Image (cartoon, rainbow, N blue to C red; front, side, top):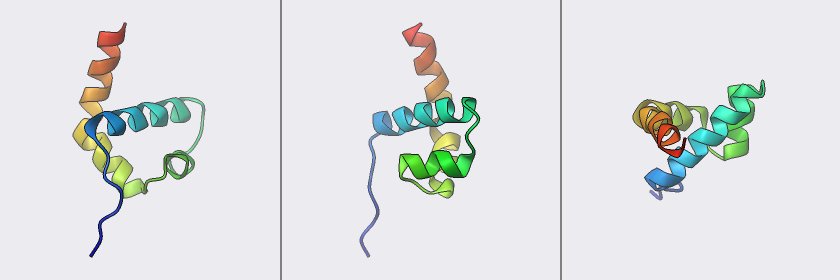
Length: 62
């Protein structure tokens, strides 16, 4: 059975950053994940697995 798209860790972190921006602008999670092209389940799994890395990478950029 073919799997869906696979993303690199960098791509996932980028998408989670986009999601944070969308949510900060008042969009809902379903709106944000639709724009990212992933399911809510995938979004929450990524957030659980990579969420700490997103905030860490933002600290390094500052």
